[in-house]
Length: 432
Ligand code: ADP
Ligand code: ZN
Image (cartoon, rainbow, N blue to C red; front, side, top):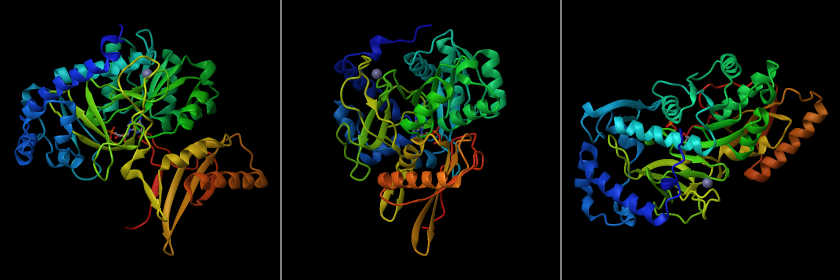
């Protein structure tokens, strides 16, 4: 089946914006059916019929993750529950989880978004698509499942973990495409090499959809080399359905965000005012094509920017840049702001290093100290002098990037904890 939708994907900006406005107006009217927005609109004096242009979006209030938590489980739902057919929730490690409900049409639209993304990166109905996401409440499982089925792929719902089983499926079923989180992709490659399987020769893998956690360009390149594939960045979050919100095209230069589904704003997290294209700020999203749970100006906490200019692929939907991280991931050490991804970028430049690392921050005698432990590539030497020299080199590069000098410990392969879900890269032991 063909999921190239040129009438939408290459729609002239003017038409696309007209479509957005029409959908925004409709969404605002229906949003009032949710107890949360009904109350909020009354409190803030919002009158949906006063929204006459896309700029008027700025007159509307923001929605936060706390709003979702406080209105758990059904306070944000804008249609009768009997018309809802599925519910997903986030992990919710603290307090109430966030819950998102979907109507039948919502699920169909979501699958369409995912199928469109997959087609964009060259995945076709003759491909065998293996999904290594957790199923159940986690949106990466069913989200990709329905998208891949809609596209017509032979879909393998392998779910998360159990690397040996994943590899057996890849080789037995001739898997050509994977959906996988980046930290697990490098791990899976390592297990393949340890089992004497060369993924470049012994598998049919050619395309990976990687996302769900921040990763650097350097890590993407490493994944591509290790597995002999092209890997495309995919962004999603459960509040916005899940995967399929934004995805890289084959240019691999920014993620197209589907503007027929979502209105994108990038704002300064302090002033809440919009930033210029190209400038980094917080991503704020408004759903304009969702029935069960519309969200208005949702604060994602993710930091990114709009890439100025047209994409050579011909799609007119805006592109957002690779994520810098979440505003809540930022570490402040000795007054310097540091994102874990900056550290990853430096580490990945060294072929001598493996892909697993852990950053520990501690306060020792009133001083913030950072320790970075990183695994060596298993083919690398144990010659002390060579390792010392390497350590010095890496620390120098880290200092240039971070402006502080971390401690660095090279550890042997397999000695750091591994994660089957999103990788935990930072341990902050400071007490605030
Ligand atoms: P949870 O919030 O429970 O971890 P989600 O799956 O909804 O579950 O996580 C969404 C978050 O994951 C995003 O807000 C973003 O921080 C991160 N994320 C998702 N995709 C990417 C990506 N491609 N690059 C960087 N971060 C991503
Ligand atoms: Zn493009």
